[in-house]
Amino acid sequence: MAKQLTVLEPEVCCTPLAAATVPAEAAVDLAAAFKAMGDPVRLQLLSMIASADGGEVCVCDLTPAFDLTGPTISHHLKVLREAGLVESDRRGTWVWYRANRPRMAALSAVLDIAPAA
Amino acid sequence: MAKQLTVLEPEVCCTPLAAATVPAEAAVDLAAAFKAMGDPVRLQLLSMIASADGGEVCVCDLTPAFDLTGPTISHHLKVLREAGLVESDRRGTWVWYRANRPRMAALSAVLDIAPAA
DNA sequence: CGCCTACTTAGATATCTGTCAACTCAAGCA
DNA sequence: TGCTTGAGTTGACAGATATCTAAGTAGGCG
Image 1 (cartoon, each protein chain N blue to C red):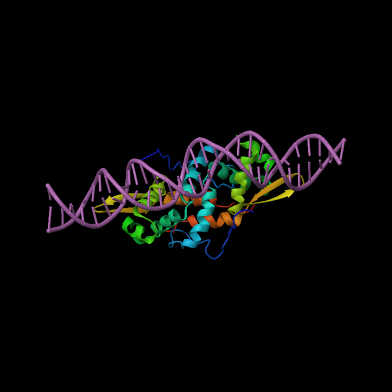
Image 2: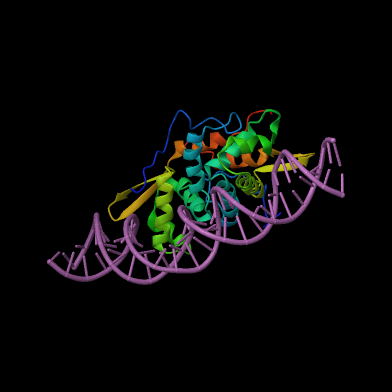
């Protein structure tokens, strides 16, 4: 791929933001993931992939859902991939995408609000 | 403030991404919030604010924690404010920031992964 | 009133990002 | 082998963004 991606770092990935100040290093990794979700198209792509029946979607089903060209969709999928939010593999003619559920769960946990406070 | 901000839309804010394809309209609002968290500095600011003892922090305590100028921190705080992630009010000489916890909880819920699947 | 401190706003600039058109790569099929 | 279709890559470009310096605004205090 392109730039070196760190992706998951199990030790620091799950402490809620509101529990303690997130270390700069962890903030970089987390921000990269949130940044990838910071575009409406990518968020919809992620949603379509994560909610797909069977847990997988063919790019050929994603592209026509937007008023964008193939290369643009491909670009957004690449961003999601490099952020560790989705994974893909080619099966014959088509490429299938599925969500990285543990990664999403970790991000959800990070935003979790402490019980009281 | 600056550009009109929609912020919370209770009806669409909490359906998990993985439960159903998020509507384009909701995606725009959600993406704006994630985008605001898509910068390491802002994520740390949000974390410092959300985890603050007493639930509030003075800007004067945030600024020196970074190797950035005051205006830059002010800019990032404005982005967080416009994304509806934090709120602020001036009390005497200082300006205090606190996290919009319901908003954070909603975002956490959006990333929640369906039980099985 | 004047001055100092704490933010915020404005303007400038270098970098990044979303998008498309054109091209390349991979797989299936005649 | 060559054609066709699906997907990713490259290059270009308009628009957004992170950062700084300089200037403005607000509140306390002598």
